[in-house]
Image (cartoon, rainbow, N blue to C red; front, side):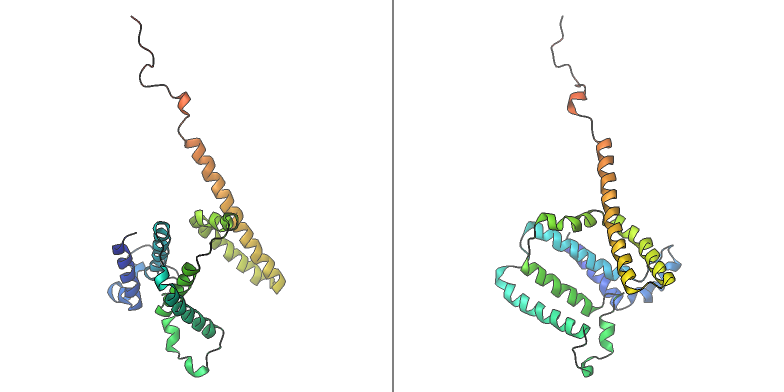
Length: 222
């Protein structure tokens, strides 16, 4: 991940905040057979690329050094506590200006939402927890098969939502259905990984002992 790539993604996010894509090409679905959905691709791509960049950099060096750790933790904690207090209604009503909601738009990943994401990332990087590998194994399973899990969860969530609405399920049954969806996601990821490993074994190169040498290993007799 290079700095140029991050700059390009940042420019794409900024273009979406200024609605430059809509001004230049209007609705892109008129030109391409694509449906972007609710999440704006230019905006959220920036967040995904930043996550990849942080993960890649953390493998090579420490991201937050001890020199700036205290100052960054204090600033990030202020942002996180402020966002949580606003979310749960602890701010005075006079402070809740309607324009604030435009700056925290979910679909276009507004600036305040990016700031909140960044503050949480700083706190986690400064804390740098190192749980046991077995505790991270379930999340790692989903991560290794994220595309397959994401594709499977879409029809699964739609089916679960439809069932809840049609059956007018009470809260207890809604919880059961939600937990069932989560269990099925893990089962799907495990099955997908098993198939990938099995396919990799069948397509692997044959053992060296079964490979005939290109040249004779003993000198030819006259």
